[in-house]
Length: 149
Image 1 (tube, rainbow, N blue to C red):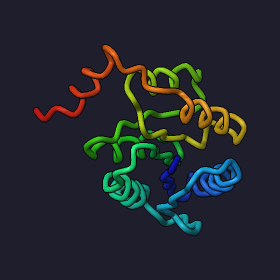
Image 2 (spheres, one colour):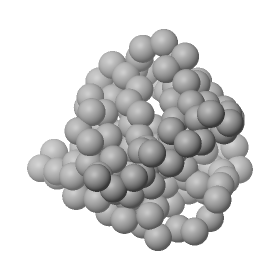
Image 3 (cartoon, rainbow, N blue to C red):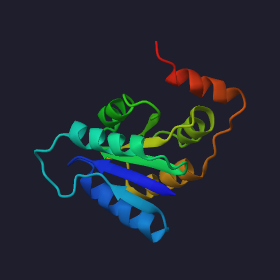
């Protein structure tokens, strides 16, 4: 499985930890930045870069994980792209992640690093990556998400 990553300064250190962890678990990682810590960076720049690269990937087995302070702004940016369905994780019950994957076929996990530690994130990522989309009645719903108004 290929995982696209992106973070601003608030999520940079956690992105680096997760990148190392993913590589140790034999995932392919595409790091869309930030490549170095800078307090002056802006999360939309990295989220747009990641979403654009992800959107061009024709591989079926790909996901995105993005990091920021709250995770909310990051999810807002990437959700603007056709085909990207991001959910936010900031320490709430992991059932939210399971349902996001199973019912909404979420393909991006946006992590609010101000509220969680690495162990919580690792558990959330494992659940996100291993939970299948249930299809069936949820397939039409996901197709309707993509419908242009």
